[in-house]
Image 1 (cartoon, helix red, strand yellow):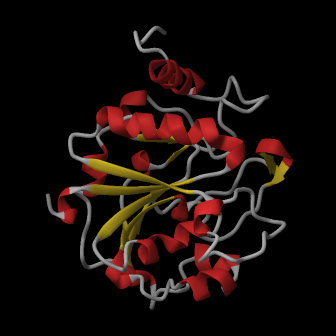
Image 2 (cartoon, one colour; image 1 turned 30 degrees about the vertical axis):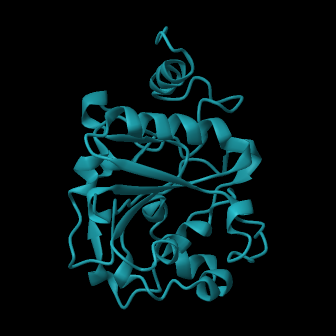
Length: 232
């Protein structure tokens, strides 16, 4: 099987959200119609290339490691990056089919102002241009060669998350926000309109967020994962 036949997914990993990583991975595998590889971006496994000190503003361990995905793919082919606080409700192959060689990255181009000043675990909510664009990325690795380990280790957070490492915005394609639906930031819509739930303010696995919008969908996936007989 050629590499291009496999959907490559990289998921941000934070030790405080281990259960979120596994539930997201389960939701992808349970619905994918094509062979799919899933790789966690766990800090201990990246220690030889990721040497950046933690920034006081970053809310997760993978705030910057996501930008190592093209390097980890040897700057070849395409890959998908996703934050771990998500739940895929549709076939990931549909997102994969949106690859377009005109672009270096393809994202959901959110245009919103955060509703809160604080999110999970008391983290400060930081507002900036292109916020959450980088939380799901289709990455054309050959066109992301600026993202060397040295650059990822030294560039500012805004440079990275605002895609200032690209020539200009013409290199950024767009897919629907249904593939990066911001829970409790966007008003609820019928679940049939959502392909990927993003619990960006805090997932149901955190105390105080057990009753957030669409929490029942996350718990249903969690129980489907841990019980062999699929009890709900």
